[in-house]
Image (cartoon, rainbow, N blue to C red; front, side):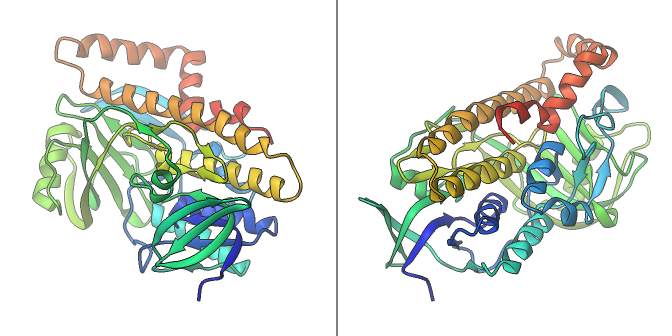
Length: 385
């Protein structure tokens, strides 16, 4: 049975919502978490947790159990078939986590939910937010038609966020959609089993990310992806975009799906007692593996600001959250769009693109800046603590 009051209502129990709730629960805040799905999904898009995100998760005690279940990747490569155009090493990152952690989003959610359960907080499922009205001391939420009063609400409910819409926050960006096929597969491959590769092809980018237990996550931008990509379809993608001299061979498809994304950002991440975090505030291409990472960073920052305010801190801390994190989202949108443009460069421009990437790789300070940006550590100075 749902409570009738709570300090903070978190809507959405993906990585962003769970990390928000965990941050609040660690500070002793009364938090209620809702999700409209009856069960957490066992399949997911995100497969990389970057260094800065691990630092942020470490603040709430979730980094160590997650690291224990992932593959530590020492670097990231950008390729054109067999040619390595750019190698970005992570081993010398200025972080306690000098690597990218390759782990399924489903595992990330399991770890966060388990930590939350240890603190006595469980996700309420399936529960749908059907209304949100501001009151003098917070908000009155309607959950499946039942009233629930909260001092604050965090919208972590994704692209079609009910919270964002109820708060009247604009969500702007290009009208065009980008479509992707994704799958977890087993492959015979000569590629390193601990390194993410971004293949640039005229038809679109292909991300090749190894996960634990010999599984490889494939994500490819395609105009009309099938609902359930099969082995033949995925093999054709690899044949077209992946290694040519020693082609990968798909031996099994664990699961496959498709998704479409806009490139959009919320006008603000705060409206009175309502905060936005994760995909409810920003959506973009998965190129660079930044989406879930930025959402988790949003979550811990939002949860920390709310806990401080509830402990007697000034309300301006919530404005500070929006002021800091919206520019971070703009930066990530720019990075994802830039990587997509690199991938889809015309045949005339591809030689110049390839030379540029090789030059970046040959100049240590420039290569380091790329590593800092991919790892999220370039955002560290934006966030205190």
